[in-house]
Image 1 (tube, helix red, strand yellow):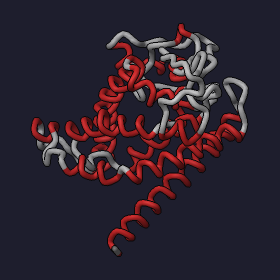
Image 2 (cartoon, rainbow, N blue to C red):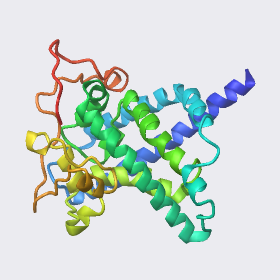
Image 3 (cartoon, rainbow, N blue to C red):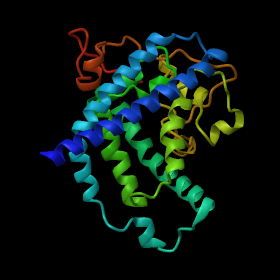
Image 4 (tube, helix red, strand yellow):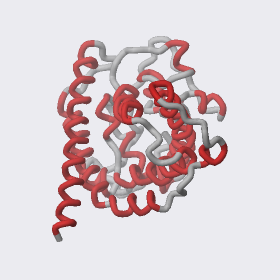
Amino acid sequence: MSSFFQWVMSVASANLKLFATAVGMCTIFWLIEIFRPSTTDIGIKGRLSNLARYALLLLGLALCTPLMVLANSLLPAVSLIDRIAPDWRSQGLLGGVLATLIYAVVWDFFQYWMHRLEHKLPVLWFFHRTHHSDAHMNSSTSLRQSLGGAMLGFFLTSIPAAIVCGGGMLPYLGSLILFSGWGYFNHANIRVPLGPLGVVLSGPQWHRIHHGVSPQYHNCNYAAFFPIYDLLFGTLRLPQKNEWVQTGIENDLSCTSTFKQVFLPWLNDRSTSKLADS
């Protein structure tokens, strides 16, 4: 019993740290969004709503921890990269930067195809639409996910990336920048066009196109970090100058309940069902 209690306390402590980090990041980005918004800012209410969803998501993920630990334990002892080039790793700062870049490229490849499937297959879309149902996208939208969507990301993106790259490959700083910082930046309501760099790195204006409510913005810009995948696979749409689109889902039928959006995202507020092709 004591070991179980210790496990519960360790998971709770880790989730509290994650939530505190999320609050801090949303606060920092909100200050930037107030200073230079791309569209009208919704204020604190929308951000608190997304943080509430994130708190429930963390609770759900905590309950799924044994399943994720089991999945990680079944990973091969040697990654595909190490089998092909066992001496590729280098030490120091250069090695850390290289490991981060390689992991990001591999991870984003699997993320691209999973993300694209989420928009093509109705059964996956119902988990993903929680994320797209934010009509006022801002940095906190990155936290707005259903539990099913998060688990899909774990099994269809993180696990394949770990098979290729190996577990524990990504340095802490690289992980913080990629999976903590970049998501907030990507979804931020800030007027920061990247210009020509938009083909190399995703940014707020480029990713906002993906969240656009109008049909003309559908089926594009699926990558999380590197738009080159969209270029290679025919889904790239670069934003026009001063193009900051309205976000959300047209004729959105998804439930508005915070609890249902996290745990029962396939439910609708109305009896009729409509798949949003966004």
